[in-house]
Amino acid sequence: MKRVKMLMVLGSLTVFSLFPALGVQATPTLSSGYQDKVLFHSPSHMAKWNKSTLKGLDPHVLVAFMGLMLVMIPGTFLYRGRKNQSKAQTVESQTDVANSEIKKQIVLAKIRQIEEHFAQGKITQEEYTKTLAGYKALLKKMEEERRRTVDRRD
Image 1 (spheres, helix red, strand yellow):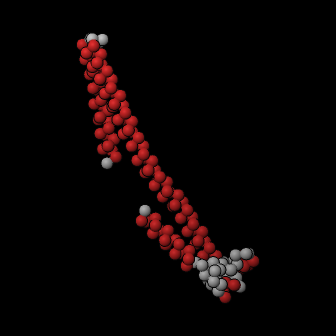
Image 2: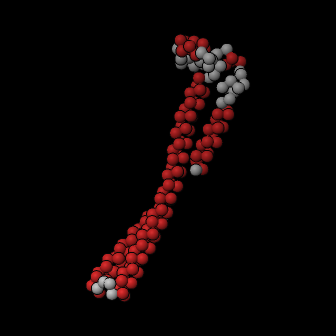
Image 3: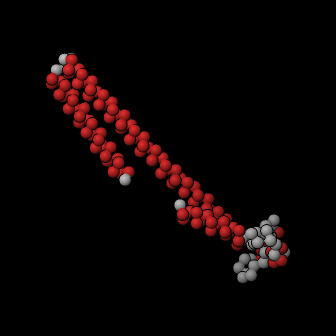
């Protein structure tokens, strides 16, 4: 996050330093049109640029500004996407823990119900032992799964 803030500050400083070249403060060399100092561009390119509405701007500064925008805009979206993704994972893990607690309470209620049925004589010893062992195994499995998710989160 510090890196993104630093890039945004540097980007804004770059933009503010480009204001004189962008026509905020007109200079005598740019008011008559751009003149290539190295003679890299052909005379036809220079003529087209000087006839355009952007003739008061240095084309290289304009290209640098557009390049900066091409880096900053996707970078901002990527940063926000990663930030929201981590929040979603936290909410999802909290929901999983809450759901596992609810399931655990349901299984414990069923164990109490079976114990009541056995105490009342509605089910046999064999059924009681078999069902109780199944529910205890399920509780053990749920507890191991919860521990694995907690360990993964850390």
